[in-house]
Image (cartoon, rainbow, N blue to C red):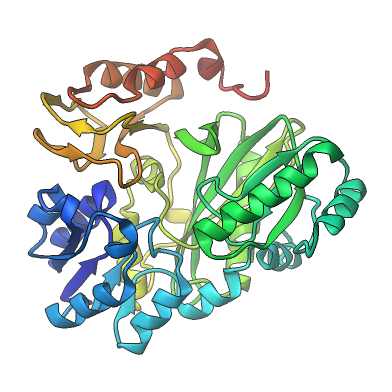
Length: 430
């Protein structure tokens, strides 16, 4: 096992990783930008080093400075969290070149799974149903041709995309040209890759994802599914597990198919396979995320498994000491993402408590929320024996949460979980 890990991230996920390391007896190294000098993850780590200005390109995305800090501090491994460098193949290779373990998928995994259009082919070959779509589109003219073959409406999607970027809905030929150039340019700016492909737009649908963990010996365990259908501008707002529209029979079939597919590609570590479920209950594979998801906490609360610790263990070559039959999917867990609506300084801060209530955050009184990074400031997760109880617990927890000084979406989340559509579990299908 590692004795020291550098955490190449910030915010709540950096705090989450540092806590896991402390519980495992692993020393931690934090890196931070000038804007995050007083951040919680800096205070919690055993060592902390400033690596640049506030701009992410000069700090959290500066691969050379992060590697240099790891070498100087004696860190044996780097945990990238999510976002930033977590799916960056060049960074994973740079770690390998300097004998530093990249806590995430192997370089071989990242090379084979980096191209999302190619991943669709691999998963289809492994038996997963996929959405009708195209290969990489070489020109606008080819986009018109493929859309006619597939049938409008269609989605243009970035080959290297994530977080809702590089995605455009096209409902008619008249919209294609603008959407094509917009998707390509956004993808190029965000990921350095302007390649896009096309998929049939399925509506109404539910966004369902399956959490997996695999070790170097080929053992694969699925932790059930999460329903991530409540989104705004392709950004997830609320996640719950299990999904209220997935039957036990569908769940067993889906997990069996996913385990087979993940094993077939030789994946190691934590990962997530994302699906669309249509109104008739058919599932279609969309993509595989080869990193820790923001919403991994929902699955942790449902299964009582620490996915961050197991991600670290898998990267250290430790094999799973449990099997699929050991995973119990009982009760219901719900997560609300709490996002800042504007920068500011945290004043009074009161976090909800009580049995089976969890709030993952980096907030403390006096903390500065800057405009430089993601708007996520916390994740509120609750667990209860039934979905109805979990909804009541979430409403109570949202009412108790107080974050003064930072305009945020707590009230918006309360309105959603209090709605009849959410209570019915049929949101997006009514």
